[in-house]
Amino acid sequence: MRLVKYMVRTFLTNKYIWGWGVAFAVFWEVMGAYVFSSQVPDQKLPAIYYGGAWAGELVLNSLSAVSISTTFMLTYQTGALPHLFRFSKMSSAHYTAGVYAGTLAVGSSAQAITLGLLSLTFSDKFDLPVYPVDPSALVGVVVLTAVFMTSLSFVLQVLVARASRKLSNLTSFVPLILTYGFSFSYLYLKLGELTYLSPFTALEALLVRSYVGTQVPLNFALILDNYSSTGRLDVVTPLSPTLAVLSALGWTAVLTLVGTLGARNLYYKPLEEGRIA
Image (cartoon, rainbow, N blue to C red; front, top):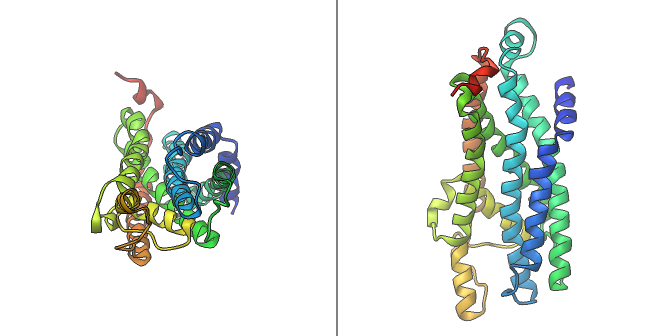
């Protein structure tokens, strides 16, 4: 419990988390509401789907930035952690749980701000209530997304700590690059069943579904094509929430196991290594 409190306190005062995880997301939701929405009619169904698509995109990117900031501390602790794991009651599992709990606490706080402001700005733009229709499900998916993003970033930081600090700047961008690529692929590409294979697309589909409170298509691009041609938002092949959740849970479990085992065998890496050309 003491470790978790320390993690939460440390993360809540991290300016990068609030800058990239909240302020940057708020900037884009304002752009989405007032700049990029010119082609969206002021009708309830198109507005809520549009808002749900932005919610899924922004939550993924925000939590990606938050998890990068919270797990980066691991690279500065390679001197202390090996001794703590061997000569104290702290284990790699306890440390991993502390990082996850701290990230979940600050990440959830960041998403409460981001989604709250998104609902207000989109509702103001369309003069309609563009709020999450299923907030309890949305909270659950946000938690799952936060845990997955943490597991991915944690594994990458463990790999850097075990391999070379020279890779730290590169690996820090990997979650963001993957998030941008896969999140846009769900919105604009017809992936079919491949949506379930990627945790990014599975989670984004779940985020959109919980925001709109009804079925969403397995291929979001189809609903856009259908609306542009017929003016209707019919869902032909709906997403299976069960398969999407199982995909995200499976990836999270595997990454968590790899990260925990990797952290157990850490050894000291001097900071100067990252400065060597």
